[in-house]
Image 1: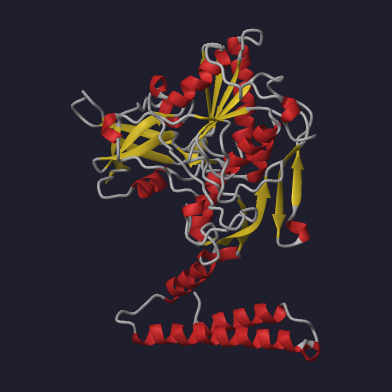
Image 2: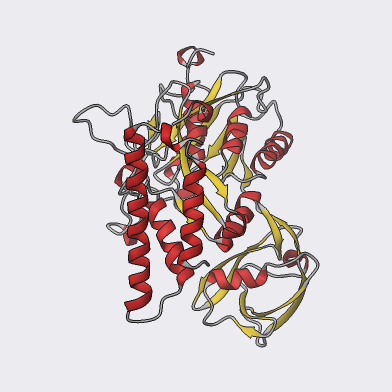
Length: 447
């Protein structure tokens, strides 16, 4: 999701940064350290030589800022697939994503035939109140044609400062003339949690982990418990399929929502101060109701923390296919007006001490989706962390033992065709029996 200075200024900054890490008395440096520093400066000189050669002789005049940005990003991406440079715009977009709220209109959109198509208006937002409907096609924004814009460019134009106006020109099926809708932007909160009652079972879907996730989950649990009735409620399904992750603290909070005690996850970095343990506090929001967690090859990072914690403590039965296997923690380090860097600073471990890195979470009950005929041979298993070039190796992998992660990530659009969901419902309703459900808490990690 991420992606000016002259050579002289860059060299001064790099040199100053390097000098600040050295002891105050260079003469006291051991010989090996002096040699290492000397070698580092030779490499920096190499960078300067290449940079000047490109500026002088490249077939077209390059942009100095873009060259430096590419060099910085190249340095970071050479470390692992998840470290990268975020330019100021990317950094701002990332903050919006993790904060889970922005100034906008409140519509979920996609691109179709070069136009922006409304997937769904979000309840109680300017779009919903103005009568924008699912299926509407936005053909112009403030009179500017959408044709030719990318989806990201169109979304960027629809977002903006709260209380500012925008006019959408909409083409609606069975309506002859385009419709103009005048809206005023408001604070929009990303709905990372969706829920519904499946008869006497509560269905909870988390699509990502942002700052709104735990609050959304708590509200959904309360709503479903009241709607179904605490005495009739047979349990919950927590759907983490195709959830790419997000904020670590939110994954901890979501896990804690279902646990009374015990470790949730631990992180171990290169230095002692980068190692942390996160533990649950008393209070299961579901009062111990049976729980099934759905995962697949698209479940990664924060979603794997949740699945791993609930599985290790035998609080939930994990059902589906093997998860992605991203067991590393990235820290966002701001660089002032120059954006930020996303740097891998630690690995995380489940309560049992297992690393998920390039391994993933293996479900207690494996259920593979049936592909419709038109997709047979076209939807392959998701390439997991173990397939990414330059990925961190799993420290627990023994010699000759292959790393493995990722699996099928297809989810049918209709619930009736969703084999994993239907299996979970059958288990919770008692229609189907499996020795892995319900799990035995006595077999879990000691608390």
